[in-house]
Length: 153
Image 1: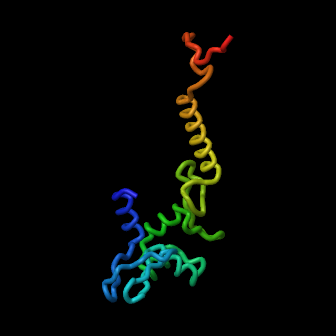
Image 2 (image 1 turned 90 degrees about the horizontal axis):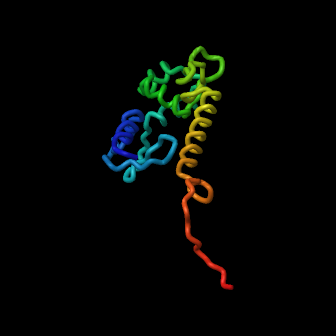
Image 3 (image 1 turned 90 degrees about the vertical axis):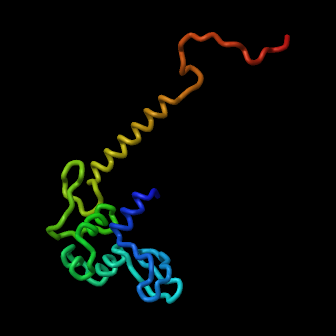
């Protein structure tokens, strides 16, 4: 991960690096949870705080999550776009597909646009592969060649 992406990750997720109790190094344990090497105190990044709050309060709105955890709505929206969470069915909230504008519950694209994007990527890769392809009968420029092996008579 390059420094720019690392900085963005730390900014979005508010990754804790030092223990607030003793100043020790926090080690990532998974699911947004960190534990201090020295005093074993737990800390959470934005994902961990949001995840824990949603587990305790299913169907909570972004405003409610922001108010009770301190995680910004922008960070929550980014986590939704990364498909870390999904908007509950039956709510008035939703995201829009970045390609066609259709309503989506998580991610950046609706299933149809995501499928089309993958088809385009595959097509481009096949074209790139075909351009670089070399071998028998690919170059039909009438070049004269020499025999590599000659039969003994």
